[in-house]
Length: 318
Image (cartoon, rainbow, N blue to C red):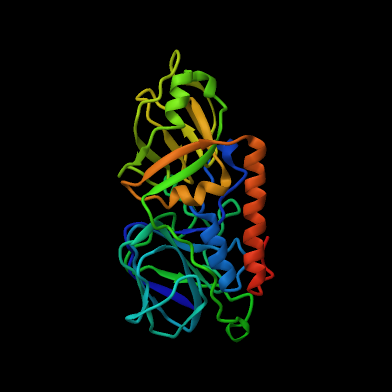
């Protein structure tokens, strides 16, 4: 089984849960931007939740099936059609040989995911099938997809006839304003009291320079004390750096492994999907919570997601 790329869209890559554990060697984790949408997509087609999927950014592509296949689409709404007919997101869908799955520009949200029953058959690199564009490794030949590429699919964990055609509630990315919760630190002491107040009260606009590496924001300048340069230390998904210009940048999946600017806060894991699905021009507000609250929010999010998957008969949650 395989899928032929008729049109790749703006930026379509093979991604999974990420290349974790190699940051000390300088390899960033890469992986999907929206883990929630990713896990749901895999569960809908009976995959284990760490199988490789396609991630499309802002503008989708067109793909032809060479054999019957089950698939699911989650994340941003890119107006998916199958051989010209509109299809629902967040449900299991059957495609026949020769069917064409097509997408347009995102109506809401930014990143869309396509999971195929069995997953995408590319060789793991350092334990992951994710594409690292900067290093040119993983995924499909270490790069974004191009017209004419053929993606082999793995054998499904369950036969197609044993997979129920189910649908789960779709995520909503409507609206142009997002409140994102953060834990202050680890270098919040580099900023003045007024600077911290600015960070936690001012609106910040998502700029067109936002990409998989970082969400670049524009808005009120954050006042710092004696500079924001630090001895480089580790960066995680959601770290918020403040460069000398004074506007924050949230580091995302393709971030560098270390950085030399002070990190004023870190986005809580439960709010990362909300943040990465923001579009250029959207407004972001930050609200501080404690580390204990962030941990409770993470556990609550994971329990809710597991219950959602189990409710629809999936026993493949992690």
